[in-house]
Each structure stands twice: as structure tokens, then as C-alpha cells.
Image (cartoon, helix red, strand yellow):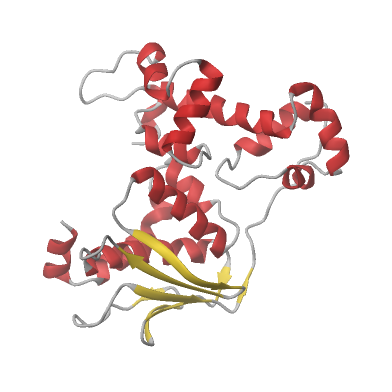
Length: 272
């Protein structure tokens, strides 16, 4: 389908797909990707998403610096991505990198062909290679974070809310301490009765996964990625350890009956 679009209209419409992300209905994958606070964090999240989707193609970061990422879109030996696939992925990544607060973002195809600058895409000529990309920016202003004060709701509840707001983030106990305006030692001490930081993070992931399994029709890979698991085996293994059921068995056992064709469950209506 992408090749047919490119044949009929060129690569420009595919490059521009990423610009529509802010206008799309809410979706766990888009939300998780747009929560990245640096360009490199975004590429890490994208790599995890590729593992969940079992994609034949990968975006490989060849070089990373404070204001530059060099990446290549690769496939299995003898089966590189089609230029239309390159254009679609590049367009989405460029829009997402811009979303992280990268100022003066420019995207260049090797060698030295600018395809994105000042928020505008320019299609490469038909014969130009499309798989090697260089993202550069002049500065980066991370999206504004929210420091959550520990109030009458209790540390446990506040900590769960902070973690649940971005489960794809590579959380550490230091990160959570900063977000809850506490010292690491104080946070560890107060979380100890509940099993500690790792136990809390695992519980929040499992709770969110269970909610998505019961209230949406998203595939298991989408749910696992959005809840911060490393890959599908990690999702299955950890969820089964906490619930004694695999994610698929849990959905089958507890999800309400599917609505008639053409209708949506209330929780899915907001995704349509």
C-alpha cells in the first residue's frame, strides 16, 4: 500500500504523516512515544516498540550526541525497507523528535540532502537513498515536567500516579524521588513496607495492563509496550507471576462480551 501511494503521489505525503499525530484520537502507543523527554529517549522507546511489534525492519542508532542522532533504517539481509517505508518511519520520527522540544531541528538524508527544516518536509528525488538519516538540533528544551508534592493522598498513591503517567520511561528510584520531591533514602524507607520501589513499579504496570486488557481491544503487544515491559515475553512472564494468568487468558476470562459488530464498548469510544 505504501509503495502504491509513493508511485502515485511521491514520498511527500508519507513524510507528512507524522505531522498528524497530535490530531489523532488517543492511543497508548502514541501517548507513550510523545512522552519522551529527549530525542535519544524517543529512539529508545521506538526500539522497544519495534521489539513488541516484531517488525522486520529496525531503526538502528549509529551515533548519538547532545544535539545529533545518526540513524539507519535496516531490514533483514537482502530485504531492505522500501523507500516508502523509509519515508513513513522517518516522517513519524521527525515529528516526534520535534515534540521532545528539539529547537532548530533539521533532518538530512545521506549525503547532505535536507528533507526536514523549519517544520516543513521536502521530498527527496526518486533516485536518492532514503535509509540513512541525520537528525540535528541547536538546543533542546524538555517538555515541562510536574513535580508532585506528597500531600494527604499518601506517598503510595502519589507514587503510583507519577509512575502510571509514563510507564514507558526507564524509571529509577532516583527519578521517582525527584518527581515526588523527596530524598532517595526517605522514599526507599517509606516504600519498604509495600515491598520497595521495584515491587511498586511492577504492580502499577500490571494494574494498568489489566485495565487495558479489560476495557479496550488493543492487541497484547500494544498493551505490553504502553505499560513499560521490555518485550512480549517479559509482559507475559511478569503478568502471569502477579495474576497467575497470561494476559490473553486474563482478557478471555474477565473481559465483558464483545459488543455487536459496529459498536464500541464505552471505554473504546474515546479511541474511535
